[in-house]
Amino acid sequence: METNAFGAFIEMWARAFDISGRTRRSTYWWSTVITIVISLILGAFFPYADRIFSILAAIPMLTMAIRRLHDIDKRGWWLLLSLIPLGGIAVFVLLLMDSDGANRFGDSPKYGKVPL
Image (tube, rainbow, N blue to C red; front, side, top):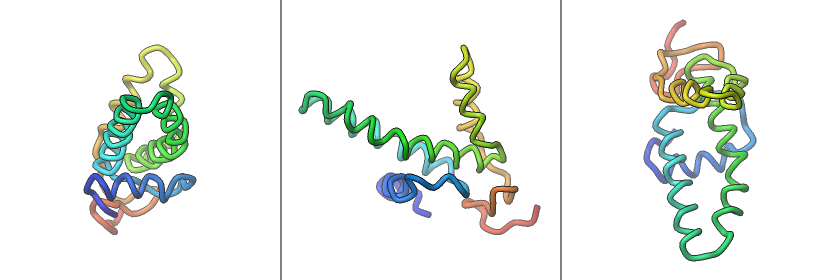
């Protein structure tokens, strides 16, 4: 998979409804940064366009976060932690963690096929 910013953003939209597999840390964060920048630019020039874009990007961002958690061998249900006080900090820390290799969700997108 692509690890540059544009490739990460394209991958986010290409796999918008795919919660299987894994997503690298760099892919997740590049797509998040680009989504925020696009939303800020849209909001600066077009009223309500940033809100519309954010609503449209919510599903791809959610599925990418689930795949990011899969990369560290956690289920997507861990995202529900962000609904409780201070749980968002825990989810943020999980999204920052690096993967170790192959796990129950598949081969590592970073290291390729590595034995368990």
